[in-house]
Image (tube, rainbow, N blue to C red; front, top):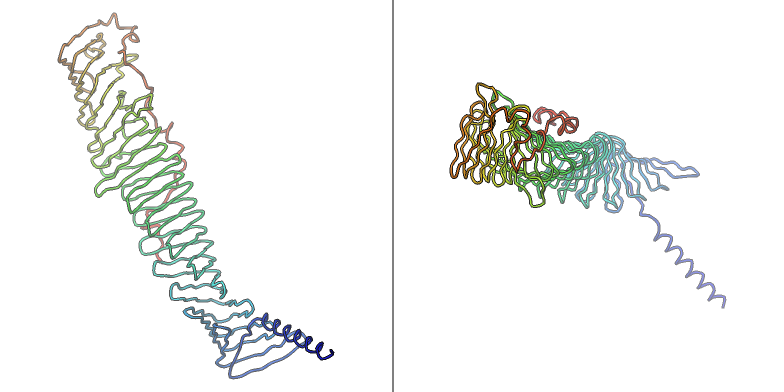
Amino acid sequence: MKNIFILIFLLISTNSISLIFAQEKPRIVITGERMTGKESENEQIRGFAGDVVITHLNVRITCDSAVHFIDRNEAELIGSVVITQDTLTIKTERGFYFGNLRKAYASTPVELDDKKVFLKAETGEYLFDETRAKFFKNVRLYDNSGTMTSNELIYFRNTQVAYAWGGVRLWDSTSSLDADSLVHNRVTKVTNAFRNVKIVDSTNVVLADSLIYDQTNMTTDAYSNVQIKNFEDNTLILGEYVKDLRGEKHTIVEGNPFIMQIDTSSSSVDTLLLRAVKFESFTQKDSAKLYAYDSVVIIKGDFATRNNYTEYTQVPEIIYSYRLEKDSVPPVLWYEKSQLSGDTVTLYIKDKQPDSVLIKKKSLIISKNGEFRYDQVSGEDVTMKFEDGDLKQTNIYGSVLSFYYVYDDAKPNGLIRSSSNDAVITFDSNRVEDVRLYGDPVSEYYPENLVHGNEKKYFLPSYIDYGKAPGKAEYFTEFFIKIREVGHPFHARKTE
């Protein structure tokens, strides 16, 4: 019986010892040309010098000298430190290796090379089990797609994802991205940038609070306080959200968007201002087309328009709008003292000057010609022709009705009420010079003594006054305040 108890005790003891050794961390092994050592109550320490080699599992370290803290399973590394594991190489002058944590730490400038990226910093650490590098101060990451600099960076080798903080810059030969912090995935080539984001390329400067850039699909999503300045066509875009599909040459702007384009191609300066609920633009080889949706306001030179849908073509320059089914108010175009409206209004611009206007269906033109005196004409379709910015001829087609005030040497002389199938009106200095009626013409003359003081009686059945033209101060001041000055990208970008 006694022998049985001894056998059981031996079996239990053996299993316990095996379990203890199984749980013990693998020990680091150090060799060198010279070794010194000392012991205390707390730990054993060995010093090594001359061609020091340290091995721990699949990690190999060489250095000039080392201090081995045996009980802690750690080593201090001194002089020409080179740490390797498979394709990974880490170099520094001084550092530590922690065997139980499987971690290397560099206290002096450090370099990491894993054949995919090259990292440099003032200090850093690497966790072998997690394949994670964490570098600090003057961090630089190089790969075949560009360079990243920051104050702090964490890089996961397995997933090839980098997290960077503090003065982050990511750039290549064509563009640069600055931010307070970012996450960059080398596999998907997707970059998430946060706070004070700035992108610069050969023609653009983009500012935003945050941004997602997909290099593979060539898409950019910018969020909050977005500003895009294009120096090639002198265009500025503001909005709370911008999606740029560069591969498709398609851009979407939402969140109280605003566009300003300043044309200085000639001696005069021509500014285009737009606001709406949403913009979409498509760029072609020689031109660009912009679609504006909902609560659209446009000011260009002496023209202003308000509507719910507009198409703007850059070359040839055309502003086109039409009445949507849900709209209670048609598109309205103001030019100098005239108001034009209809189901469809198209403005053709040539050399910064109005060339012609085409109004389709339920056309109405109202021109102020004095206190309470409004020249008015309505019809189905209207074509207006301009020369050097002055209105020269208006053609009206279908169910023409008109009121025109007559002047004799600039002195009021009554008005003419006319109706016909079609009409042609010619102008001199933007005043009616001649009216010709075609198809069942009827004209009535009202002398000045009947007109004076009774001007409000003489309105067409379709007369509607849509108010004054939109002004810059009223509709665009809030955007002017938001504009942040940026330099030309060729001067703004720092080459490194």
